Amino acid sequence: MSLALIVNSGSSSLKYQLIELDGEETLASGAIDRIGEAESAVVHTTGGEKHETRRTIADHTAALRVLTEAFAEYGPDLAFSPPTVIGHRVVHGGSLFTGPTLVTDQVIADIDELSALAPLHNPANLAGIRAAAAIFVGVPQVAVFDTAFHQTLPPEAYTYAIDRDLAAKHKIRRYGFHGTSHKFVSEEAAKFLGRPLESLKTIVLHLGNGASVAAIDGGRSVETSMGLTPLEGLVMGTRSGDLDPAILFHLHRQAGLGFDELDSLLNRGSGMLGLTGNGDMRDVQNLASSGDSDAEAALAVWRHRIKHYIGGYLAQLGGLDVLVFTAGVGENNSLGRRRVLAGLEFLGIEVDNDRNELPSREARVISPEGARVTVLVIPTNEELEIARQALSVVSA
Image 1 (cartoon, rainbow, N blue to C red):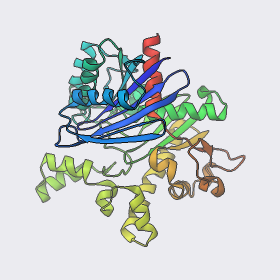
Image 2: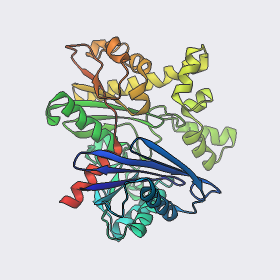
Image 3: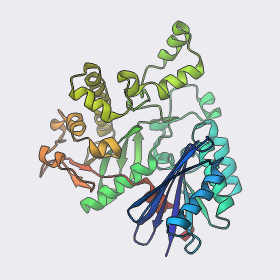
Image 4: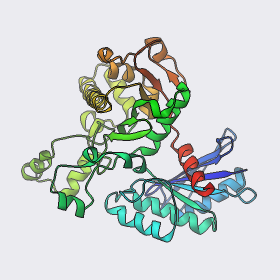
């Protein structure tokens, strides 16, 4: 039996899944939060049962030990069935990494160097890699990069119009993110429709607390909304998305905000949170339904930005076969889906209201029969995609 342990390590958290690779079945999953604080929460789910404990966990190595203890106590016991491979989510691979990569000392050094482009993410991802290497000695580890799928962007899509020498020196270009999700969902869409991936022009809307759009032509990413960092693009839970960069200069001069304050404002105090006081789309939707004008205005901005990208990416693709909603908001907010696509009928993009309202956790069509563009809802599964990519490396 081939097993992949998937590790998603944050600055103070560690999420994991154990996936049986032959049948692509999740055998267990869990999360460890508040690492390094006085009390950490540990949740381990297997066989339909959730086990929760609280304890002090000093660092990520201690967290990996707690993970192995949870498997030993609640199952499956990794001592009897050790993982074949450990797959790690790494946010930023820069231009160095175009696919899943076996972790070596040099790869660790490269990921560390790229931390300048993702200071909140790459160091945390590295902490998980180092901790797993200490606990699971001899088990191959594979890094799967959020940016890798978008390395097929053409130069005209990834180049910013700034001084080229300065951009080259500081590695400034569009990298794109959520690549693991965009790859998984676009491939699942082709499977679901029974059509060759190479024949499809697809737009994927990954709509969650973080959100991005990707234009995918024959399985290759040709445009995406996030840029050098995950800040660019759509309106998100706490991120502003696109804005005039001169706003930063204006706020610095007129409001006296420093660089750290501006960084915090745009990444953690903007988006839906900035517009409504709530960063969770469910709360914003409830406020709008109760007549809150600020919430309704915020949702209109959110929809406007998505529609803007759909139109632009349809033009870049030169046509469209499939449009896919995925991630927490995209999969579960039927009203949001309907309103986002309202008015796009002239492009062949339509929603069947009955299909759209039907609750399901499965892949499904929500466009009318015979519509020119097939509109789908496909649940994303980044952990499974990481497992598939990790296995492809160790099986090569």
